[in-house]
Amino acid sequence: MNATGDAAGASARSTDAENPPVRRLADWDDAALAGLADEHGTPLYVLDLDRVRRNYRRFAAAFPDAAVHYAAKANTARPVLRTLEAEGAGVECASAGELERALDAGFPGERVHYTAVNPPAGDLDRAVELAAEHPELTITAGAEDTLDRLAERGYDGRLCLRVNPGVGAGHHEKVRTGADAKFGVPVERAADLLADAAETFDVVGVHAHAGSGISGDDLSAHRELVARMGDLARDAPVDLEFVDVGGGFGVPYAPDDPPLDLAAVADATREALGAVDADLVVEPGRYLVADAGVLLARVNTVKETPETTVVGVDAGMTTLARPALYDARHEVRTLGGGSADGRVEATVTGPICESADTFGEHALADPERGDVLAVGNAGAYGYEMASQYNSRPRPATVVVDGDRSAVARERETTADVVAGEREVNWL
Image (cartoon, rainbow, N blue to C red; front, side):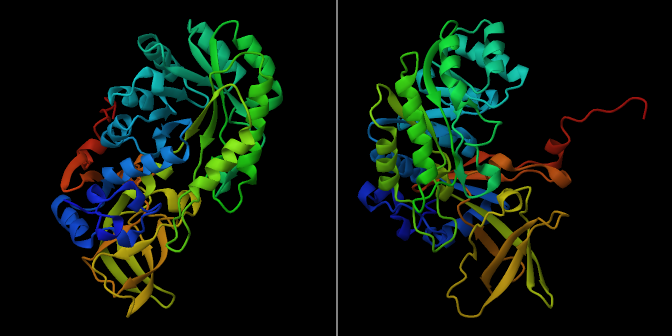
């Protein structure tokens, strides 16, 4: 089933030149999405694999001399991973679970980076085991203590040092990592640690990440991070294979926001890095998958109040956490809602017993029980952050690719929610 719509370029038939740098929610085919909601129920995530494919191609074309590693935490659906692997992407994994999923999806070790933050012992054990099976795999350490823990496990393979450059960027304070002490070793300690690490490991790179939501309006923080990494690479006491400047490339969530000027970001990155005898690595996550996904939800309740019209839907903060977690804005509209005439300002809320369980204020066309709403830019950090709070099963995910569609994740049931529970024999 083709859910992309003509405005999205009828993805399988369009050329890369016709592929717009951002897909708006209105560019999806309402009838196709409604058909998927009827067939598979709601809440339902829909992911367009061809959009993922074309987003990657656009990004790779902007960074022709760089290795593009997908930040898997944005969306680990197996079809997404396999699509990007087939395109030649690398992958950046933030946990041992992501590492296993990337390798299972077919990524060769030489295109896999494990970049964990404060990895638990079990994660580090598994990463070292997998690195023994895939010696081309690179493990990134962000603390001197992690170097010691790796050495204790007998690891002496490819190692990258994560650096805290002292500068961060992003759309919300909770996603700015570049200046957060949690992430990476202080930049002033990096050279000494690189020299020490080279006595035990095959030191191949340095890594930093400013945050999430880098925009073309103000690239100063991104430029500063990249420049500091360039200086570090030039002064490094060991020969480096690559300099990884992370990701955080933003996408427009509001319908009137302009797309990221990717060419300008790429030019700024190369200029700030300067001449280094090492390859550049970049790590887009949401940029590749955000506008490739929508969340479908069905209206359960329409309630008129003196303040607003409350539209209650069957998706909530357990389905899409970003609005509650980051005050993130996701466009919402009614499928088949027609023109803007007669629309009302409504507060779209979920079924969770929390005041934070809201998708915000949106103009909806005469909301009625049974309407299907589409939530835009839901391909990144949607299902990945879904939870079973309130004992609610997680939703299904359907992937589409041209005229084909398939279930990529089954809808959970209450039996799945309680599957890990055991009887306590004294109760």
